Image 1 (cartoon, helix red, strand yellow):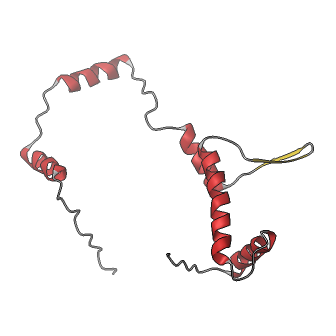
Image 2: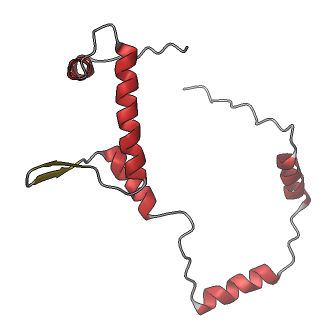
Image 3: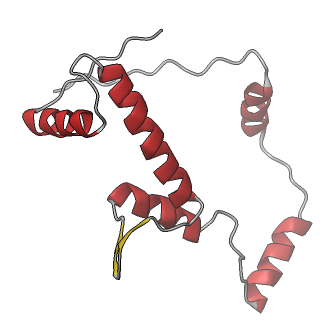
Length: 132
């Protein structure tokens, strides 16, 4: 079992304590609290990813759940990768001319592509410049 420890501030501690009490958990049940909260949050995120709105209703009053993270999920869904590409006549002719040409990359590009295709290829080591 993995061990998780998070640095929290007083505001987050108070929120977690309030949630723990609402869920009827003892102070020593932090793992259970995180499990419950993660389950609820996971469900909300999956619903938002499917484009569904999460609403709270009481009689005639309706309030929709809004949060920047959920708005990012819904924005990504509204603009999927691979949207229809519309070209005008000149752009279509230019693209056709490019595609009709023979693909003949220079030797350096061929070597780089061959290197990328190797199964045992290792990514380069990252080196950060020294701060001045």
